[in-house]
Length: 269
Ligand SMILES: Nc1ncnc2c1ncn2[C@@H]1O[C@H](COP(=O)(O)OP(=O)(O)OP(=O)(O)O)[C@@H](O)[C@H]1O
Ligand SMILES: [Mg+2]
Picture 1 (cartoon, rainbow, N blue to C red):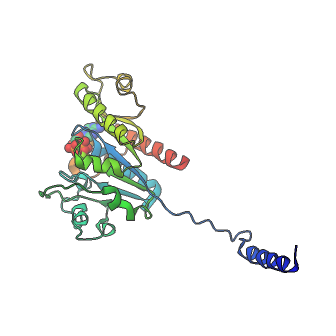
Picture 2 (cartoon, rainbow, N blue to C red):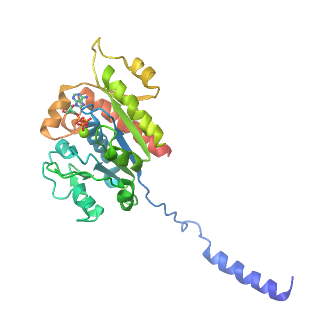
Picture 3 (cartoon, protein in one colour):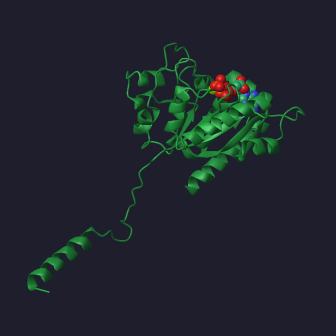
């Protein structure tokens, strides 16, 4: 090795050792990158919004301001009603109409950060790149929970495409199961991973399907069976998610278990 090369190597070594973190100073900066989880079902009224409202409350109680709930049911938004927000001052419709940046559409309700929809919105719903619209929020939250419209129309597809993974909600009734299969096929078509299925409004009714039957018919794991519980209807009417309104009710306990399941799953990465 020539004297010149030796000199250059010595200079490099001293620069690199100056850059090397010493013990205790090696701070790892892990950027936040929200996991976008959507709640879907082709059939209306099965409990998508109820699930998003309660799950986001549970996650917020554990993870604070790292959670954002988004109402992506653009035609008929009603996530706000579950929080008693009838006329939100800022909405997803304002952001999609470019009237304000998406970050400014976030509001706080019952301690939860949410982008709600305008309940009185009557305009047309155009195809939106929801994934692109939500992109600036990904570095601000750890989880973004999306409530979606029923059906498999363009707004539902936009919401599915915005998700990293999805949860499917069904009821244990034969006609609902047929629609649920359609939702599962749609998610598979867009290659969005499915976390599992929630069987909501489960009752001890001989005409309903058992959880075992639902699992067999759908072919996906059942991650939660939430009982039909009058406290849920009551809590929706009052505008407070059941996990806060009646924490000891059977439905609230099941939603809390589901929240814990998701938190564990998120920790595992
Ligand atoms: N486990 C439950 N027990 C009793 N009532 C429930 C339960 N889950 C949801 N509900 C009630 O069912 C109604 C419909 O629920 P929700 O609005 O969540 O359904 P959805 O799937 O979001 O409907 P849409 O497709 O119209 O958006 C609400 O009044 C809600 O309070
Ligand atoms: Mg809904």
